Image (tube, rainbow, N blue to C red):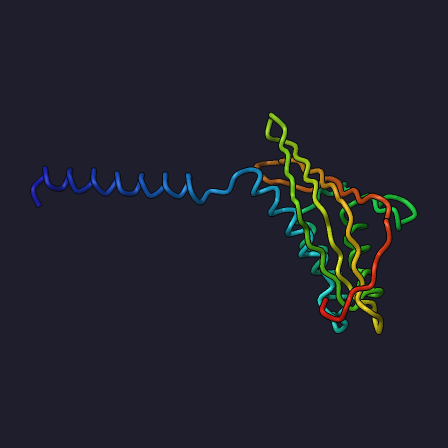
Length: 179
């Protein structure tokens, strides 16, 4: 291959590669808001109770691992049904693990997710409506819907949950068997 053709080919290949990177960055690279939402949704997925046969020891280990990737070590959770706010990633994991003793199944979904990131792009607040769909062991399905606020912080390029705040309960309602 002549030197001119080789340079032209290399320049063309470099241009195509650069165009591919730009297209990926513009259309597929997640925004900071999307990254923050992903962390919050991952938390909701992690705390699910997948069924009455879920092994408590395995659940605790799974939660410690999952929440270790989502919560700062000194994270806090303020939920009115708990006598005092929960402080610390390990304590939150223990509380989430204990949920399986009350619930045979439980999922948390979020609607109306509103992320807000500060100007420095280091702190974020996510407000949403959380819905807990759960069934007690041997009991009817229940639904509880409330506003929830997640505070996040960006550390070493990653978003971490710092606190979770749930307001007082307005009343859970039984739902039909289709839940």
